[in-house]
Image 1 (cartoon, rainbow, N blue to C red):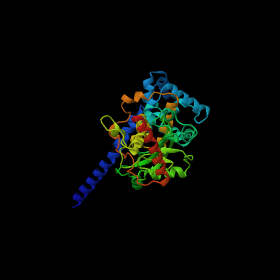
Image 2 (image 1 turned 180 degrees about the vertical axis):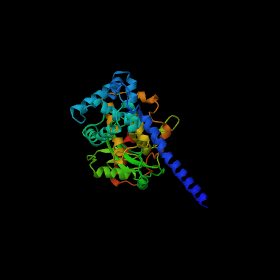
Image 3 (image 1 turned 180 degrees about the horizontal axis):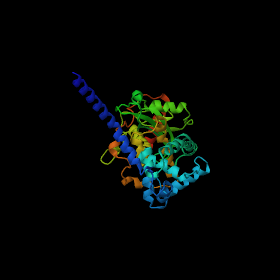
Image 4 (image 1 turned 30 degrees about the vertical axis):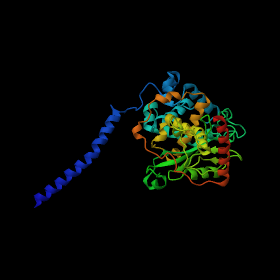
Length: 396
């Protein structure tokens, strides 16, 4: 009996020893791999520092800079100069150019801190500090400077110089659309962010002018929120439409004097008026066709934005507070690229920096909204009738 007991004790000790070695051996391996000859190995041994790498990209082939930072070298340099002059970012042991490179590379590739460490050769704490500085200080400041509503006293040349749109849309300031941006959050917060496709997103409202510049963005509403709800919230927080002016919106919004929607149950999409389709048959169809031609600018703007910054189509590792600011950051850089005459056509045949298999299906917009105001409906009818009279005179 005593021998059997000793055997059991020995067996238990052997099992405990085996369990301990399962933890000890990996630890010893990691210690051995980190040290050589008793000296801790340096992780970043490349002779090309992050500063040198950024300089090489800025001075090399233009395409390399575009792919890495989503803009040409001259735009990158002007932005860095602006940040330095305004003291939004300052030179330390790391230059302003390199810090800007961190942030743009993160946006370009959805790069984690580990990805940044491999590329630029600093520790994770360094990237955490500088990326968060951009989110908390730089992006809010730049948004006030480079996301501005259009001058209500100016009629855009694309309207004024086109008889299809002038004078009917002379009071139009631009177009508005909602878009969903994928997010990652902890499971206990899922519910309000789950959109109608079952994925997790925030609902972002974008306004643009007819030069494809983003003039306003509201980011942060949960994916379950409707486009109309996001618009109402934006108006309560300062988004204003001057009296007598309006934006063009899709059928997911209520038709009001400030936000003109197309007629429901009437041909609207441009492909419905394309080759092989009959011309507009009445005032409502004509209004919808020309409304679609102008509102298409916001759809094109969002398309360019997401092509340039595919991080907008994947989940990221950032806090929710910072995830909300990613669409704002992308919009600012989009406007800067256009302001400084950057080329966006190179994106047409450029594969995404981020694997498209990581993209998630998101809603395109709300279902049709039946609501509207008497004033909004009257304004739309007046424009449609005046437009139809001119159209018939031209056709006949």
